[in-house]
Length: 113
Image (cartoon, rainbow, N blue to C red; front, side, top):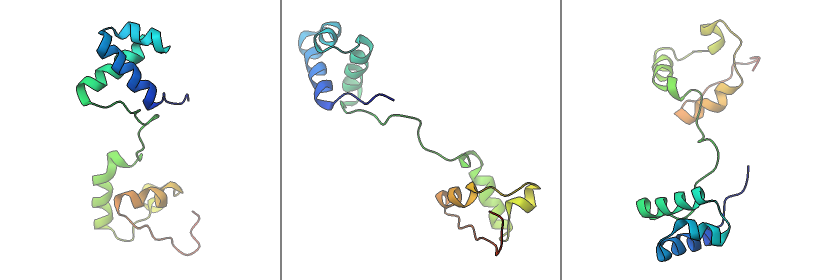
């Protein structure tokens, strides 16, 4: 993935576009895409921000959509194991992902995780 443009360049493009009144001219002058400059100026006008947003997909857990159901199940059954209740091998991901929801998943002695 390409690196984000510098805040300095973004600021210069925004200032030029707002000062000259032409986003296209500012984009050509600084060698950035017209769409890119348009997005920067729009974001500046709407939010007053010129810094780059974080790139990539927002972090999250595959368990997030099932959070409430899982927490309710854990409350009902304190000795819950995924392998027993789902009839499938336990996943290595559960202990790492469970802590995001305030869950502490104990490992049974000799468990094949």
